[in-house]
Amino acid sequence: MGRKKKEDKESGPNSKCPDNTAFKQQRTPAWKLTLTPESVLTSFFIIGLFCLAVGISWIVATTNVKQIWITYSDQCSNCTRLRENSSNSEQPCSCSVEFSVKEKIQGEVYLYYGLSNFFQNHRRYLKSRYDTELLGRNVTITEKDSFCTPFTTYKNGTPMAPCGAIANSMFNDTIKLIYHSDSNRNVEVPLVKTGNTWWSDKNVKFGNPKPKDDLVKAFAGSARPPYWQKPPYALDTLDPNNNGYINDDFVNWMRVAALPSFRKLYRRLFNEGLPAGNYSFHIDYNYPVSKFGGKKHVILSTLSWCGGKNMFLGIAYTVTGAATILMAFIMLAVHLKKRKPRKHSFVR
Image 1: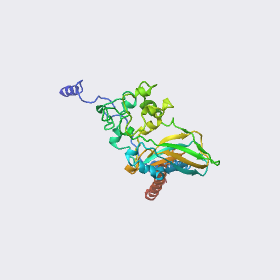
Image 2 (image 1 turned 60 degrees about the vertical axis):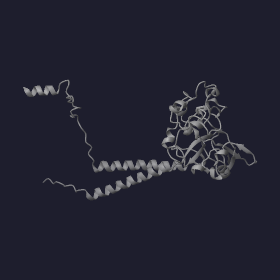
Image 3 (image 1 turned 45 degrees about the vertical axis):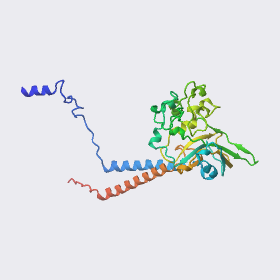
Image 4 (image 1 turned 90 degrees about the horizontal axis):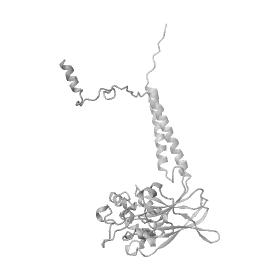
């Protein structure tokens, strides 16, 4: 009788014991994986063949990508030296880099700019932005409102718009592609400057302040960052859907890169393909890189189903698949050598 009262007391409403259910009392049916040589070897062969197929397909697709890579900071050495001194930032400097396309490039062609030895993944650099401002909700911010310091306000108290180190260091070289025809005529290749960003970036993460139809008034009371050559409302005065904080070049720059050497989409060619012939890049050289030992690149590239020209993943998949299949064969040989012979029973 005393034992029954004790059990009732332990299972009462104030008891800490789990409910008397199959799940909470661990009485549910269980399944335990039994690894047999057949199942293990089959799994290894399937995984190895899958990785091998993906790796070979990736390498073939990447090999078919056409790419022209030019390091123009080395070829524009006079402009590189000029930009070493910050006092020459307002002095214009341009250069031309000539190259040739030996055979016609088929498909849609993309124009990228690249930077090396530029660490956008630095912790303090990553935090130096104010997302509320980039949504267009607050243009004139103070020191206490963000992590943008020291790129928040000028000494006279005028706020910077946009604030932060990321926005202040925005890439601002101008790149034009010139085609030199056989008739000695220089034709500028038309480039598309919109539609080069992620939809979520331009439509969700960025927005212009009100009134959106008059950005000069919207940015009144603020000033451009110190390294910018023009205010945000003048980034693209011809297209209101590509001006201010929703400018494609600005949005792409604000999506920081994970590695110190990276490239970002700059333009798309208006016409699909690029005919064979002689070309040149005409570059308004504004962005200084020599102080941090960096280099600037311009890249013309096509794309495949796996993106641009990148052999790393293809090689990684191929090596992983080959190693897995090799290991499967080794385990198969060991299994055939070490397995116990079956005992046969004879019925008389």
